[in-house]
Image (cartoon, rainbow, N blue to C red; front, side):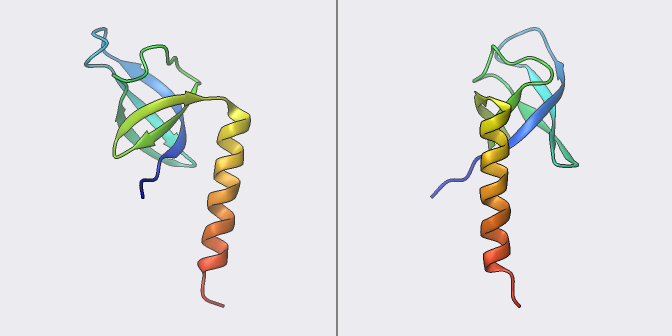
Length: 80
């Protein structure tokens, strides 16, 4: 099973579509992410990221839904 995590693009570097990267915020954790698969992405957009590569652009409502489900899953797994 694979997991992609939503994050918000804070900045983008590079002009070549195959070499673009961006700084993505995952709820306070910020990472550099490759953007080659999502050439339409702009600063402020939400993306799904799998192993350091943005694989799709999503809207904010979908990002919030996924984050809520991930939080619920983590809470269910937490020891009491």
